[in-house]
Image (cartoon, rainbow, N blue to C red):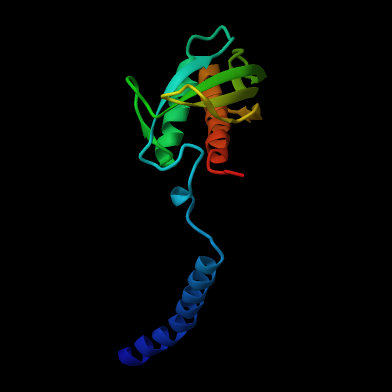
Length: 175
């Protein structure tokens, strides 16, 4: 009885296996490749990157730190380059927070903010680390959303992380 169930399971799994093999063969033939292996505007993944500057005209001293931290996390997770904090780097990037607004939308009976609505615009410029020539510009990237955070800094972290995610995604598009 047990061997009969085992044979039935194998017969049901065969069409799924054939479909997966066919999909893998057809996707490989059309030039599809995993995003982590695609070239970026920086070249191959052995190149080094560091932050040249973060220009942020806000009154918040933590703004530069959260933007820089979001960039470091995204570059590392997308395997765009090796991150260096100081010294010579193959590429350097400048970030500019062009605009930032955060509104307190919903408050509780103790006047504590429960929901923040914010918008931010950031642009990036990538430079060659040796010649200081501009390699790539992101242009202004904007995003707006509402966040149920306990403080404005946490909401700004989530907002900047999404913008940096979009900027680094555009670094893979070389057209």
